[in-house]
Length: 210
Image (cartoon, rainbow, N blue to C red):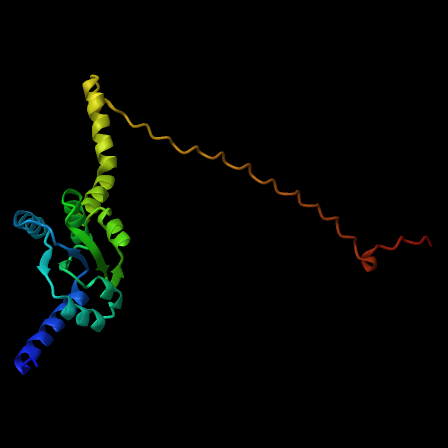
């Protein structure tokens, strides 16, 4: 039976792998069997340049770690020579570097992967590898933001090349039409009041002849 010290060391390894599964944004499992020492070195260099950690793993210990974090779907692929490429910051980098390298080195086989806590099958890893990386997406976004400014600069340069100075370009502003004053509303004539009748008691009586 393994000594207590060996068991403790294995527990620490399992715990460390489980922690990487939890904290890494993505990872790819590969079968590296058949790669020459030179090819393996080239792969490691490319992954290192992309900020990806790469190492050979033990299937049994990795299986325990996978179960600990709920990655039970990895059980079928954890056999034979297995290595793992993971990234803590770039979701696409491990899959992209591995997939690009596998195109030129058919001895390298992708087994599976994971992304943000979800296990990915082989087809899903390939789709992830075809996704533009973070730098490319940022460059495209900045390019779209700068497009209007670039178009304006090209337009002004074309005018200058044709002998038109930017200072000669006049921007005509359309003045808002002045609304005509509404006609004054005629007031209805006030009806004249009829003269008041004299009171009956004030009427003079005609003089009588004697």
